[in-house]
Image 1 (cartoon, rainbow, N blue to C red):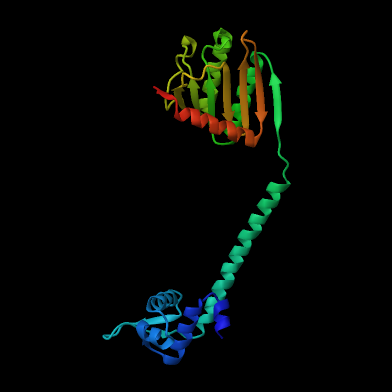
Image 2: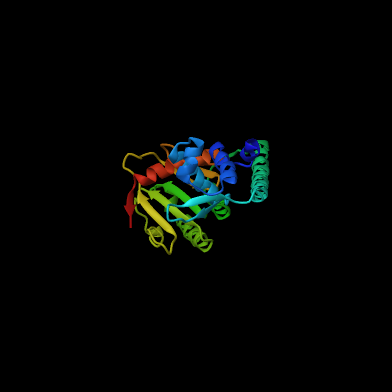
Length: 259
């Protein structure tokens, strides 16, 4: 009989106490402990658990609180509750298995593209904006305002228009910049909730001529050589972007806030 109760989820102590109270009817926890030669603290814990499960009924008395066993019919309710719990766990397991199968069956998708020219810069920004819209509505950038192409009036106009489209799309941006200064971007080069923008000044140790933009699963890198020739590298890969994103966050926390 004990084995049946154990299969219903009762502990050995709980099972012994319930069966004992079916025979002895009404007893205090201390009396039950003596009858079963059970440690008092263990007995009290088991009695409390049985009361919560509805298997014991508590009866206040002058000489102390006593307990009596509920009708054995309640065991059927306990079994039905166990079945419901197992069914819920089975459904959760099915969902978990399907996810595991999906995750393991999907091949890692990696795309790398290397381009040159101002149009490549713009195309990269467009890809990042689209990726941000489809993910967490966030773009992270690191660049220098001293980059040569920021001197082009036409490109400065395009960047300002891009910023307006980004804001309309509800995409926030975090920028780490050197702030070499550029009046062309004065309206948007500030930390402002309306602009959905936060700016920080990069640490002085970062002297390399490179730009970085991250959103969704896309990393965009702009790299200059000593003659100011540059290439734009687009990497579409979830795991690479997670790595670069962590590096950006590390630098962000060590960068000076800019109002």
